[in-house]
Amino acid sequence: GENVEQHPSTLSVQEGDSAVIKCTYSDSASNYFPWYKQELGKGPQLIIDIRSNVGEKKDQRIAVTLNKTAKHFSLHITETQPEDSAVYFCAATDSWGKFQFGAGTQVVVTP
Amino acid sequence: ETGVTQSPTHLIKTRGQQVTLRCSSQSGHNTVSWYQQALGQGPQFIFQYYREEENGRGNFPPRFSGLQFPNYSSELNVNALELDDSALYLCASSLGGGSSYGYTFGSGTRLTVV
Image (cartoon, rainbow over all chains, first blue to last red; front, side, top):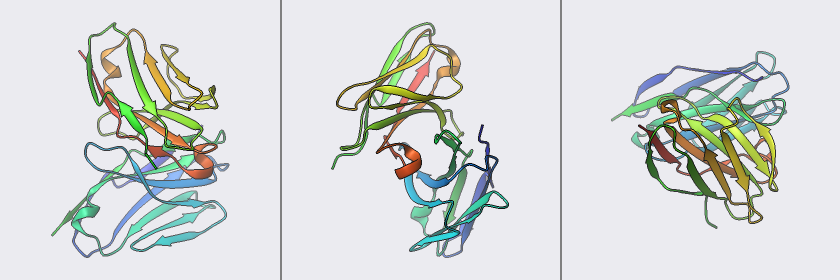
């Protein structure tokens, strides 16, 4: 089955700086890669996603890149703000179309 | 448009007991998935229901079972509770399967087994 590894587990950045989270996956059949943000006491919220036929996608301060050959994808947050502090999860579909999540990255943005 | 709602929000059960968790899907969504999220971990896939039929299951024992109703709401049942079942249980709905449209998650039910 699919295996997703996510790094780093924690990330501390100064407000205004950029944050990058990286994930690798194992199943070459995976074709959909969403990123979720989870705040304390809440369920994960979809923030951006990318499909295997696209190399990069951007939505305001958030961007995701995908390298199918290397089987890795990354989340980029620019001009970070305190409200970006949360746990971020990457995910990949397995060959059955079910999600496998990474272990999460705790992002802390300090003013 | 309402999101995904789960009940109850918190629950304490004794080892060996049975528990039922409930989920109302987002309007228009016909697929429901359940995930278990242990503290400090990513969500782990339990199973998925599409139009009242289970169409995928993760690595969970049979004492984890579910139902989806005609209105696409869903239940997760866990029998013979164990201490390791303590976790946040997340329900997620989607249209036609999460790989096509992505999931909308509820806020979860925090289950504590003592």
